[in-house]
Image (cartoon, rainbow over the protein chains, first blue to last red):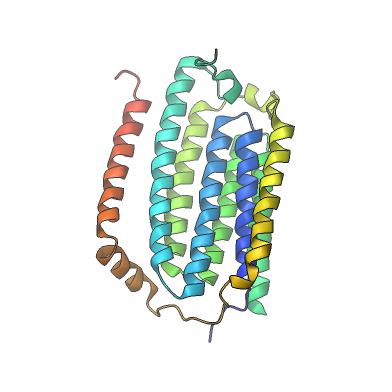
Length: 104
Length: 166
């Protein structure tokens, strides 16, 4: 049958790699759109984890949680991009270190 | 064996294009690389017998969210942005700290790896979409409704944010 011969650790390591790349992207880049895309990458890494454990336990609950995470990602992208548009209209910049209205 | 080769292919594709995504100068290239990563992740979902999530990943992430991203990039893209410095001042420190975090999580995984379930031990339900639908509409009815309210709020919020005059 179609038993997965791939060990469980491989999925977790892939998820860890994508998560770390996403964290580096959020922390290192100046462009807010790239930062938002990195957050999408982080959420995606979490989904891989959920899916792997869903498969390992033979249970679809993990997949249901992944659906909720995808919903959250969609909501976050919509609101985040709306904020970026509004900010860009006011300040003509996309760089996170120039968004310093609240900085003392 | 074939499983491992497929996994390695999709994993290398996902990680490689994720690295390309956070290093590109041009945001549009970054978006295209992110699409590649998401498609490779969809392949991994398929290899985990999550057919419904495979389709959702492609339709919703690649077809919906990424199109939204590309739209906004087209609206706000500045030609000067490509020539600016791409990384902020604390970049090096932040990169090192993220690496430390990754090593820590790896260590935790390494210690706990013997407790992981064996891959071939359990079977997935045969009809994946039906099983997901059953779980979603029976056990997770309330979270489902809350998620719909969340999407409504996000939709209204996005419209209000993007409007010129409120």
